[in-house]
Length: 367
Image: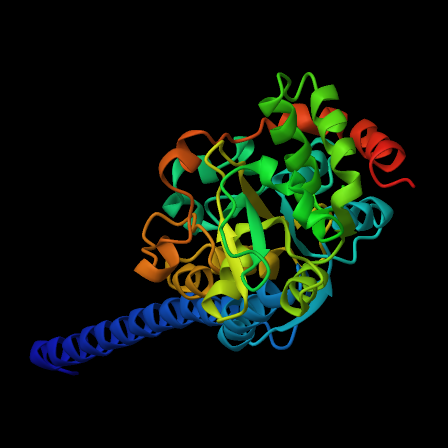
């Protein structure tokens, strides 16, 4: 018969073994939990070549967007990004046509088109949980319900060939100068700048969004001076550089980029004011790559990416932590030009877009 001491030694051994086993088991469970939680985090950053289809405006914007947004995003998330080059209303038409089977995952549009897309249910709202950089935006870059987000601010500008126009324009009325006959280039109505020009001219002549007749009538008197209506930014850049266009109306970022590149292009903001507007980035309703699309939108709103992209593309950033270099900042509207400027009511404009487009084609661009 074993002694009481032997029983105690055996009990201690079982207790020690049990404690060690329990501790080892707990440690293994903890490690499993840590590893298990770490794995998804790594997976979130690796999309293993998943393809995202996004809109790009093209031109110098497109080159910088590819360099500072798309290429680093592909590297960061191991994803493939395919680009569709498209301006605002062409993009809107694509979203409508693809409504039942969307092919575009992330779009870029000027506010005028973005508001219409939102109202027609073509967008997938953003979430600050999935797109945390929404919380870093200046207040006016957040839209109601985060249907999309503003990723840039830009202005309507008078742009001119510095070899043909020696004195910078100071007023929209300069477009009517007899010496510019046949060399004025204006935006087509399907580029958002066309609507904005018409609204600004209406406002300068006793009208506005609710009373556009003065704008259409004023534009109609400019037709003898007009060479053509541009429908792509590359077209406008080429005409300014080769001297076909002496003066015209363009987006400030495109003109500013030409200035920084040393092209024979000047940029002026009329003292009677301009139009300030934003561009939205958002997801298409029904995107099949929502998680990757959210990463892409968040990436485009990041301060580091906006610092690089906006400084090169000469655009107003929307992330509050971005500071532009002085040579870029001076190309933004200021003084009287800024004081006399306005930001459009896009919800109201959206109601009239189709009507204005038909009227423009009938009264402005028709022979």
